Image: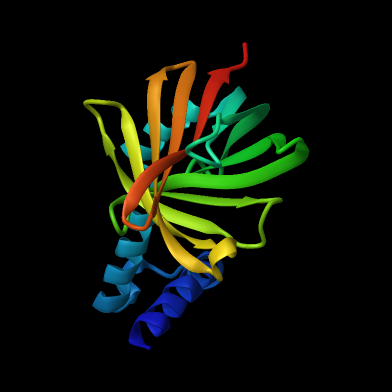
Length: 202
């Protein structure tokens, strides 16, 4: 409860300080030490850093090739599509708008990626026209391989919502090429279920 109260107080202070500064010339020194520490922590958490600049290299328009393994004993299905990555909220997050097909039908999705300064992790979210939920995962970046690895859990509609561990890998090949891979763990065995090859549009 105290955390929630502190968060609300911080938001209230952010909203009130500009007006207070105009009307009463409020100085930071007029805040209590606790309030000053809170404001500094929130300001630090909101400041884009090197991780955000690194992610910004993904901004742009891309063509995609999707390869999906629905059955390990059958050939994969392939489709093509497009993706547009846009910086939002002052460079703090990247939004991806995806258009393509799924099993021959129109398909679209919206995702966000970014870096959370507070928890020190990269994050990825995804929503699409093939579900009514949202997938959230967190991960790290390996500079040696230029690879982002995210871990999360997916509620499987075919198994009454059972949670399926998911590992997502994004490998930066070069400035114009990226590879996304998705792995699912079922019955203790991990298998690759999807790959998307991204090529920057010129």
